[in-house]
Length: 169
Image (cartoon, rainbow, N blue to C red; front, side, top):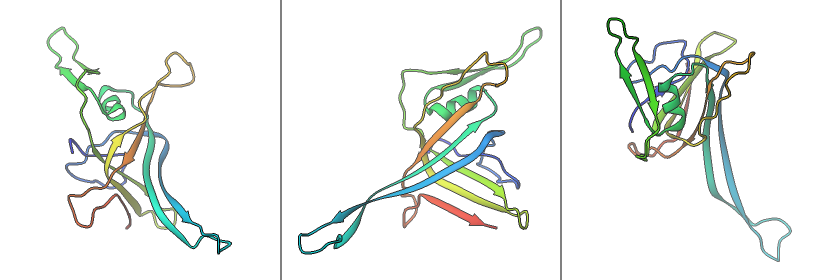
């Protein structure tokens, strides 16, 4: 994939993980399964239930409104940087371009357990932004933030393929 990332960490993750700063309202992941029931006239209940779909989602709001986080939330575009020079301020700029690419991330997150303070870490191994970014400006009691919604896909670089891992340290 094009890059790897993490949310908030109580212990260093090392490279190639990239910290994205603080979040608002935590991090949510969701795993849902769909099943199709096979019914026949001779039985009152389904005789078989077959898995017909699965969805893995990760959601958060990045508290720092900056070009790099907008890029992560949208999954398209580019960030350019101009270094500061004497008498000139530097800048970072997000640009949404006409080039559409499939950008995948590994989405990592962790939180401290209440009982022993050790982390539980989760990774959606291959994820793509699907929610888009919508921000409100000018509301006095709210700073702009970057909502991020990602959908998990099978990572087939290993066998068996993986989607989500949760580790209790």
